Length: 311
Ligand SMILES: Cc1ncc(C[n+]2csc(CCOP(=O)(O)OP(=O)(O)O)c2C)c(N)n1
Ligand SMILES: [Mg+2]
Image (cartoon, rainbow, N blue to C red; front, top):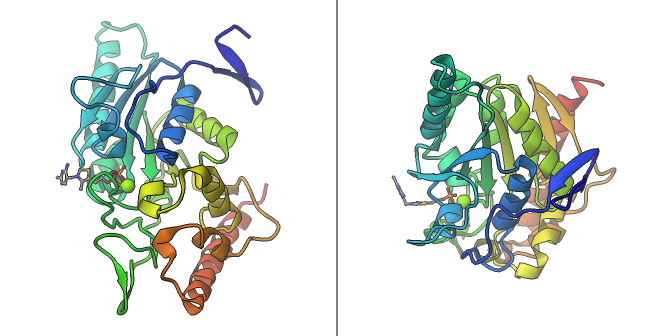
């Protein structure tokens, strides 16, 4: 152990911060927490590409940057293609003898919109070609930096500016797209879900994903005080409740095999999670009962997948 490291599970993690202070993330932003943890897990030997979204807008107001690692901004839709190019370039450099070896990790990051909507084609291609990189989706369940518009990751019943709740509408009327399952369907070696409320679990998964050869995908649910309409002081609690209610279970999919990382013996009622957030304030008791049923069914399905691969 040196002055720059602290104990982390069986190993060590740096005390350095790679996302500098002075950024413009909102108070209590779950995304900024997740980024700090992920970068600590990876260390400084990393090249990162970042799709347009809160993480980019809040960190690089001209002429400043909060990134203490090599970082590039990509379009909203093409971070999967850009990281593919970086990886291919490094590979050629090794093949041509300009580099002895590739000793740098590659990280691509995008919001839920950049990942599950507009960037899914570029990401799918990168997975299919088998580039060696880690992709992190920071899922705050809407297009937040542009004004809380719904995405395909917005959950059923949540109010957004483009799926508002009212007399005739419950808000979002579609189900949340299952992006981890879509990533796993590419037969990539590693897929996981994570939460900044479970920080050691998050950091282990990020490190594992970056170290595994080939594409890896880590989907992180990040509470958003502005878009979800909750206080910045309950961000971590809301993240924990998402897991404990079964709304956002923590699991890994390795070569198609599912493992649950946190399996509460009894799930807490979804109402405990929903009632802390203004985006769900309009829900009636029957609406909440319906969401409870959906969550139970999804959780049962996940457990069936886990049970298919006994340890
Ligand atoms: C082709 C294109 N369409 C629209 C935009 C405007 N735009 C920038 S970021 C964004 C939404 C980002 O949402 P998400 O990926 O979920 O990231 P968040 O802001 O929530 O972190 C939109 C609509 C754009 N930059 N490019
Ligand atoms: Mg988003």
